[in-house]
Image (cartoon, rainbow, N blue to C red):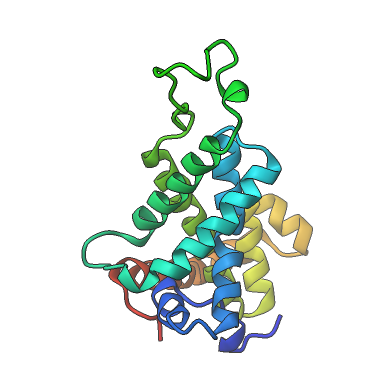
Length: 211
């Protein structure tokens, strides 16, 4: 893996700032890479089909593009703002379904008929799923950055221990090290990972680009 900074995914504040330029296609691709699967997963959890979920994704990205200039990070967290967009697109998609498909036992012509809410997934749940996606993104970015600043064997030891949940004895046997070496490597390397992760999280939550 190339360890150059240009190969590190940008933190969200940096990305959003770049996305204000509609011609920055690289920034928009990075945003889509980060949120595409979470949005589709959320739509599927709301009971939408694959085609409908992809439509929610397309319309959500379009809505972000149209309203990004109005987003005020001082009033709400980004994932809350994005959750509102995604939830609204899900509701729109449900309203596009034929009424007889939505409520087969009701009379579509009845004045009492209403499209069903996307109650299968609440807005707080959408926020939670987006938060989990952000956590996974930060974790992966932290591992990538750690890989650029520690010896490969040290990165591998820590990754085996923390990412794969293997014991010190298992890692020692897999990598041909003593258990003492595994312990020392973890002692020296894990604080670096935690520091990188904390810096990333601080940049995300405080709305500051990571230098």
